Length: 68
Image (cartoon, rainbow, N blue to C red; front, side, top):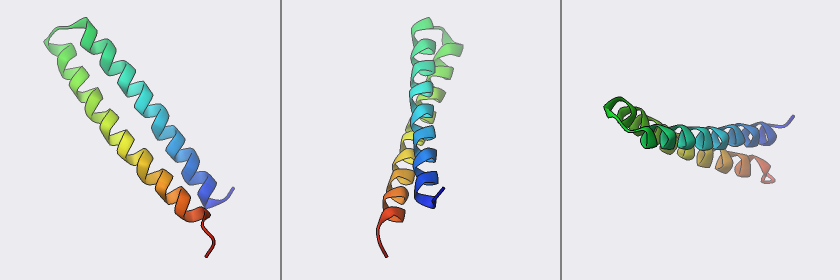
């Protein structure tokens, strides 16, 4: 397995984490309540972090595939 493939799979894992944190945050938001609002806010922050990580790993994967 090359470094580019590994970086791509890490990016895919981050994308799955984005979807998971989005769904978890939306479920918490629909439940309502103060505790669920805090959970929803936390999950949405995680979603933004995972999106940024996914972009970084996709970019690094792209760079690793370029010929020297």
